[in-house]
Length: 479
Image 1 (cartoon, rainbow, N blue to C red):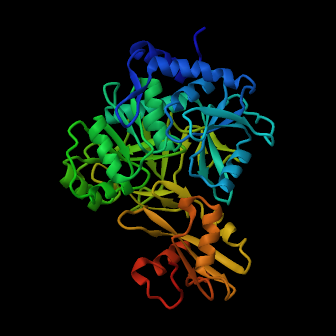
Image 2 (cartoon, rainbow, N blue to C red; image 1 turned 180 degrees about the vertical axis):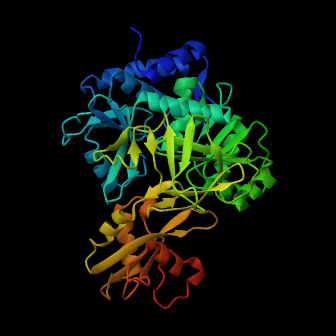
Image 3 (cartoon, helix red, strand yellow; image 1 turned 45 degrees about the vertical axis):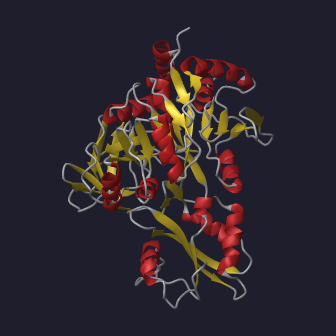
């Protein structure tokens, strides 16, 4: 019987075209899955999912595993909802994500083996009532409170995003994607996983994110497309004794705006432009720099085909935008926010300004901190700091980390009893929070500084406690 799921239909067409050709490579250049193997593994994995009812949420926490395509295809066929989880997420955040999504089971890698296991959750809540538009995917994102929230996606929206990305970037089944960014992240899911399933674009799976290893693997495997992030390109540009990348034709950067200094240095060293790609978990791709040689801080190019951008305040020098696209998710879960997301429209927190024929990101209106593409909600870190005995007040904010408009590090101002040290608080955070949520700096102060209106401003704190003012007598710097 013909599938009515848009992604499954696209997969069947890709499978017919590329059945016996390689689908997934390891970094040694070995074929670990052909397209036919992916289909076989998907059929095998379906048998492990028969106990779960339609609409159940299955969390997948396996890193960049070669069976990601098979797992997702199997869940599509069983009409289950996939919740990708990063391997490095802290236990507290993992528990919160499983709870708010009403997850029924977790797919994880067996330690020391290359196999996967499905573990039902004993405390799982009843399956959510998804209504007339049941999702196939939930993407986690930070909300305006300390609790995470998820974004609902149907196959039609994921396929639209995949098509828009591949068409804008010229990615086809003759390319080889290098998969070092996490597949569980929205960027990796859209640029690595769905192109393989819907368009037959093979990929390399890599778990080694050290710059020297990535460079060696790119040379060895001969990948043609490299989705990366600004911090990674900066690290690659700082390497000495680099080798040429003759097969690489497309370098993509997303997760945070690129600094001009990073793009120039990389271009001079590797003779490769970096193409900025601006998107959001809620709507997929928004803008793409097709040329890659603008060398302008935060430049993200023009809207991708199929995406419309409307400036909310066209008379201002910088404005939020309203994004319209077939790839926009159906809404937040469990609590919707129809003013921000829904009915094919999404309003990001970023502030955009016109720049030549495209746009550049100049800031944001939200307090969410961007740490190398991962979003940190200050409220989550503040709530944890306040659990420490003796801490009376805590305000968490982001500070610029090196070059880049949204490449940030987490910092905190804390008012506490004299016996509480910044070192104590750092150890407390490292024990429970995800690595990217742990503050890099904790400033012990007698009182949290306020602005001229007597209010606490995270933006003002970021300026006051900047790297250029490390000698301030207000605080003592954590080691």
